[in-house]
Image 1: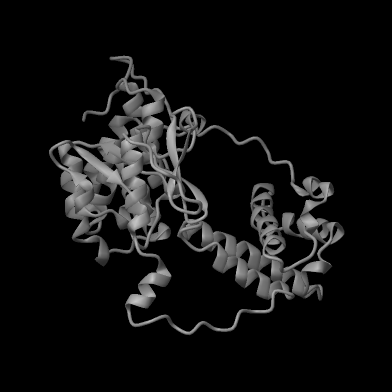
Image 2: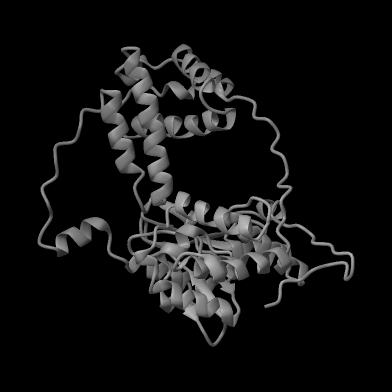
Length: 358
């Protein structure tokens, strides 16, 4: 493959990262993962992303650029939060991450305004320490630490854009704000292939329309619920038995990672059938959770979530001989260490191990 001449600011391949040696690329001012170790495939995917029209280009195609509202005054915390929320919108972050950041920053601004702190230069280490103490009375230490991440990024963004003269989070004392989190317990629940089959059989009998197909495609491909909302029939390669998870025009995958997932014929049928009914279903987290609990109680199974079907698929694929690296790529994980927490060995009295038939 001939080398390309890199132009400053233009999309180009950067480097191979992680234990899986996956290529990353430079696109619209940020590094993104391309989810493949093959250089030619990485270049093809990068070209596809670069060819997609951005939101401002789409607006101009609809009939000219719309008049923008005057930008808010960044000297106020509330206005700075709005600018930061706009900055975090896709493709810089995924839609879910941008929404989470906006919510956490908004919570912080509301707490500051109750104390009559309305300007960024009024935020000090003492003020943040009090905020962390008050917040820790309401939520866990892990949530408090997650709240601090977008707040720090907001002040770094404000300093970089020239909205404030000094970033208070640059002070070394701010490293002490993070709370010590309790060591997470390993996930004791490991659905065996036999339990998964029992759940799917009961779902075929009593699930509401569409949910049985959702559970079957999740158990057979380990895709996330948000990915199930956005994949298209063209992403399913029937001949090769592969499902391609790739960013779309108005939606991005977690971490912008591409991946090809091996799937069975039954899973292909569920994937293609689910597309026709998903627009008529309630696919929010609460609705899916309630449906799973209703079915698993009837099947006399322990409490679990739809994400546990993803863990069960990963464990079964590893038990069938797939390496941890391959399973990590199929799941779309950023590191093998994340995948290791998913894997379980299923033992039985008769055969020693259970395997998920493909």
